[in-house]
Length: 142
Image (tube, rainbow, N blue to C red; front, side):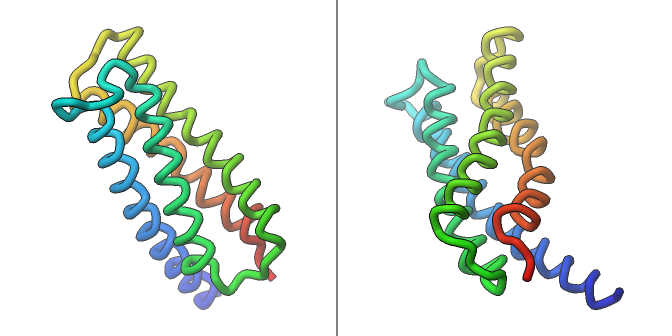
């Protein structure tokens, strides 16, 4: 029992570390694409959120496959990548929906409001779902 708890704690720590790196890529990319002086998606925050989210997903897949769950059996790259991107596509919509509500329903368009809605609330809603999905569906235990 203690070993199982210890392994889960270690697994979660790795998952959190990879997620933190992906989060930096996602938030940094979003702010570069939407909130810098000559931002290419200044008027298209949802597009900027999706593009930065995809970059973050790529970082997360590489980190989780090759570090967090490197000891898990390989069930085929195509299967893992497909499931990983489906799960992350679902959770990416959480942030996009939160951003859309903030921007277009509540009329909040500051960088702070965008980051809280997409990158705090949206990402927070998806994190527990991703952890459970990765460890039970994508990177199956032996």
